[in-house]
Image 1: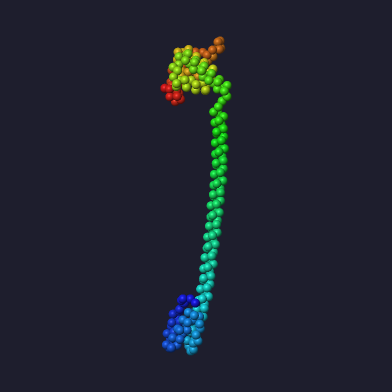
Image 2 (image 1 turned 60 degrees about the vertical axis):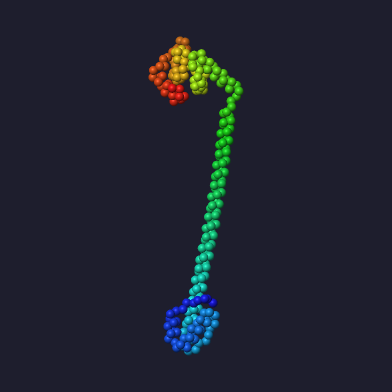
Length: 233
């Protein structure tokens, strides 16, 4: 049996209306019923009141059982929903992890492919054939010797500038430009760049480069270009 029960004030009013002996019997019968479940016999007017009390307590028990069942069902539903949500969340996290791993693996593969491709390109560009290297060295020597013969200073920066011009314009054009510098008594890198940047005319009679004056505004443009390119000026 339960440790408590819900008593009504109307029961108290009925008990108070009974003689003390009858009231005591009714109270004793009520608590015996709620504590042990035993039904004591009652004679007189208290019998009808006790019957109403018993009926009310039984109805209370039925309602409490229904409420308890509904609460249990609601709690079970909440638990099932929580488990379902946790499972779904776990699946989503697992799916995200797998997706991230796949993307990461693809990125690593693409990165490795790109790095290998770049390495192959670097390896291919690092080395040239021996005969080609020998030819380039020979051209370098010819240009540096021609510049020395023309009166160039021969400083490291000037030698580097000459080789850069060779890489850009080629052997024949640089040699022709050095010859122009010597002809005009201007053996310096700035004048040579002006010659190479200009458009020398070729005479129809001799087929040689016509002598030109590269002074003035063209010299100023060369000075600005040299300052930006090699920091010479």
